[in-house]
Amino acid sequence: MRRPMVAGNWKMHGTRASVAELIEGLANLALPGGVDVAVFPPSLHVSLVVDCLEGQLISVGAQNCAHQAGQGALTGEVSSTQLADAGCKFVLVGHSERRQVMGESNEVLNRKFEAAQAAGLIPILCIGETLEEREAGKTLEVVGQQLGSIIEELGVGAFVNAVIAYEPVWAIGTGLTASPEQAQEVHAAIRAQLRQENSEVAQGVRLLYGGSVKAANAVELFGMPDIDGGLIGGASLNADEFGAIIRAAGN
Ligand code: PEP
Image (tube, rainbow, N blue to C red; front, side, top):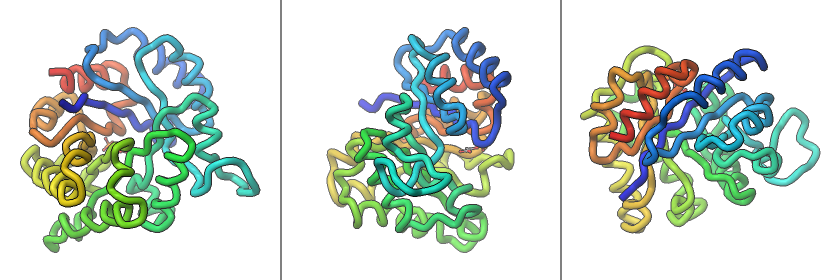
């Protein structure tokens, strides 16, 4: 039985004051016991969030990490080792904004995934197709290549200690959501691809859906057999809305 997870990606939002306010709202939520919850603040605020959430059942993750673990001469980067030291448990790898805007390739993301695990972090690998790719009927091919890149390089065993988030690029921050059936089709394909390599790994790995998830559509999405929770962007900036999404995952 996979334990549901809801992750809140705050992206490049938040000042010290607004982050403190959001955390206060999160701390006041009555959260269901059966759901893993994590928030992903900008790296600048990770320590503040870790400190403020002490004693709460909410983990902290980072939105990105350097392609090498440890410390070194890499101006402007933050390593998985430093993030783990700061109290992070998870790190997003390959969010579409990093693939598309920062030009991160599968090769670079393989290194980040590996560096994250080397430092003891749990990577959440984000994969998904653009609208153009969906309209060209290439969704499963694109997602299969993004996933396959990690499997080929690091082996399917790397997913024993990882999470996968399917996030169609056209649904991120647009208000457009994949229908539960569209999302389930891709999640089932992801699990089938893993199953070809190792059925135990496929059965155990959590697959989150991301892309304009709100309280209003979460129940239906999370009700699908291969959707184990969500990666939430905009709606995670509102504690009450995020709380309602978490409760939907606990149903
Ligand atoms: C995201 O940034 O991962 C995301 C899913 O954003 P949103 O929920 O705002 O679409």
